[in-house]
Length: 448
Length: 168
Image (tube, rainbow over all chains, first blue to last red; front, side):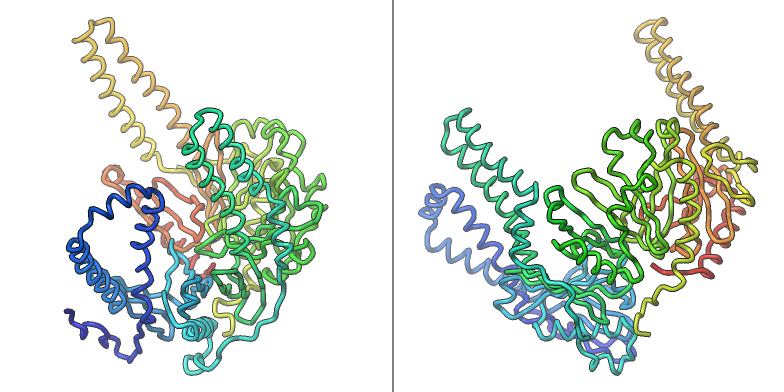
């Protein structure tokens, strides 16, 4: 049926062993049509029954005879034509039956490596390997690999990216890891209960159906809106609980290790020196317990969670590990008169101007915003790509200006409504600091 | 070509910053395009309304003409506001009249320098220079320069960028 010899060919002058994905891969999307049919049948039972009785044995057989081999063939061919290989400097992935695609991923540019194991994949004993690379929108992934193979490949990729000699890269194996933090399930559950979004979704789900009942007196309308709303409210918080369950943060020479998940397990590695921005978020209701959530951006992707919930001093210690030499400015330091915008900034942004703050230390540019949900964003000077000062006409009238600091993660951190003179000083000073801050940074190949 | 001393914003406290403005050719090009487009719009409006609805209605053709006059002044102000300065370690760009923006890009952070020039710009002997860093938000663009200056700037930026290259 196919020409299997079209698979591995030796094009490189130096032999590079090409490998295939795990043979379970062709089945990874097999459940999709089944799920669609089941979902449709559950949504509209009468119609489904009517359609079922109309089906004769012959049509069913013909449909099966056409669809099953076609689906199998497609799955098999995509698997057959997907190869990957690791060379000294690159990871190469070749895919595509009709439209060929070859991805060459430079190892020293890898920003993060994730091994994820969705529930079904855990049952089948396979794992997905995903790579964050600068400049691509979507993550390149190898799905699926055997669990052991995924772990070995991850270790090998990191060893090669770190600059170990190619001959020894196989034997280096997993770097030892030291646990920094583990989030107890109870804290996670409480933190989710103390999040406004959880209660907001629940309130909407509880208020909308009675209102609809009063308006329409139709049970079906109420059910049709109430059930999905309740489902969404549940999925939001329960989904987050399941995703962030058993959050473990470790430190190893390869970088940060993040392990989490109740049903779908994920294992992420962020190599050293890759973190561009760290955000410390504190929702209103977490303030009494002084809990915070820490998010980080690496080049290529932004908004990944570093710590879902932790007491502030623990989170600060973790941030100090992630950004070496950085101490998080104390909460009190961010609310002093010097850190706040001048009073006249209130003419530009009423009330909320009080939430803005700025602290610049030797190592980091820290900007605060938010009055109820407080966010402090930290950018190490070494990661600043460019600095911008913007000033609109109304801001000029009140002699204030915004200073934006652009990072490689595609996000900007903004110090809003600074005094115009101070902002100009900041622009000059920040450019200088971002230039000199790079001098003592670690090389891309962190073991070299 | 030199637009001399910087003014306003209090943002230019440095001593030895030598600002360079944009060439007058760019202003000429923009004004010509403005006049050509709005002039033809005025002509079309005047003719159509004059023939179909009566001569009094043709007075509406004055609207595009007024817009052209306003745009003429605005383009001049905007053109004067654009300037750049090459300092020892970074490139400074400043622009905008009402919404003022000043950008500093250290040479070491430059990933790519692009020189672009469309057919109209080539006709007027102009080329634009755009700087890319790893941050997508960096909007460091010099919209129009004489080709020789654009090439000099590109070569100098590339050279300095290589010498001070810093990675991500």
